[in-house]
Length: 341
Ligand code: NAD
Ligand code: TYD
Image 1 (cartoon, protein in one colour):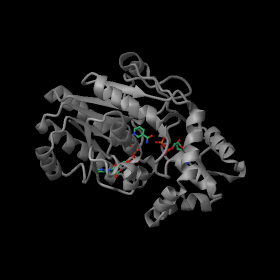
Image 2 (cartoon, helix red, strand yellow):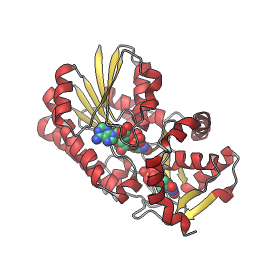
Image 3 (cartoon, protein in one colour):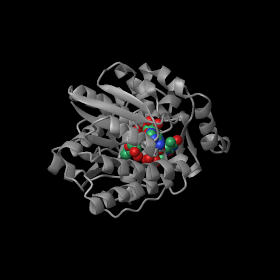
Image 4 (cartoon, helix red, strand yellow):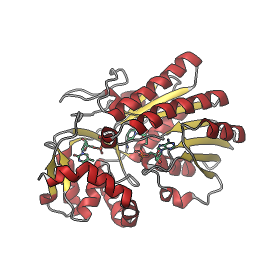
């Protein structure tokens, strides 16, 4: 039986990826190492916790002793690194954990994987490493790296470390860079789950600036399929971009969410803009399409309806998250902005 190690598998994308792996490959063991930060939630994989092919290990990717023990005990073939601090706004409040997990953690994991001589390593990165676009053009894999937030700077640093391990040590790594994901189990601090949850509770939707920033939205299942295709069919040392071909301004997206939820536009509140706010992201995925045979398959309108439906049916999941720590973050992020209205 082959074995895949997934880090950060209790988060949004990692948990969707593990579910897909367990369903798609009956003869594969999946080990999930997650620190269970505020964003990691064991409930995300509750439906698989009794599966004998699945093993959860609570641990920090920047702990060398954990890796020494785990790699000695298990025959791990492939590693997919999702573990990260992932929210731009939190990186503006405090960049320390981003440097520690995203950069130092990646370096420690890379060293452990190198010693263990694994078959393949995949670094889950982001289109945000390319910086910001004007009204025209797309990010390709050749676009120069130009991160603008502490989050994207930490992800770029990790990508450069991965690249250096390929060049210096012949380490078998691949990097994927994807645009903004949406879907079930996304922590309600990111735009889509936050606005769905606020609207469901008739709380105002804080749109940054004029709401004219553009993001390219992709369903998490399409992204997870792209990661899997890259791991199994991609070429070592290559980068693959993934996007959803669905570019939309934040304000337009906000109005779509309100319309689908049957809530009034009067819930929209314009608040102070995010510092260094990237204007537009748009991805050219033609390399993944041509070389991996990948294509984004989920139409945005269908995917977002299904996602709203999931949040409506699983309001307990969101309510459980909105405890003390979450409210402290909400207050530091939005308190002043909303009281200034
Ligand atoms: P998330 O914040 O929902 O999940 C991150 C997970 O990592 C959590 O379970 C958390 O507990 C875990 N974690 C954090 N620090 C850790 C550490 N030191 N050791 C072990 N586990 C740790 O994030 P997500 O949205 O699922 O993103 C996953 C990955 O995909 C990240 O690397 C992110 O940069 C990348 N990405 C995200 C998007 C997006 O739209 N969400 C798009 C492109 C790329
Ligand atoms: P987010 O989901 O944080 O993803 P990212 O910053 O990684 O793209 O934000 C998506 C867009 O929505 C981004 O342009 C910032 C904007 N935004 C708001 O307008 N209000 C909010 O409360 C949040 C969280 C985001």
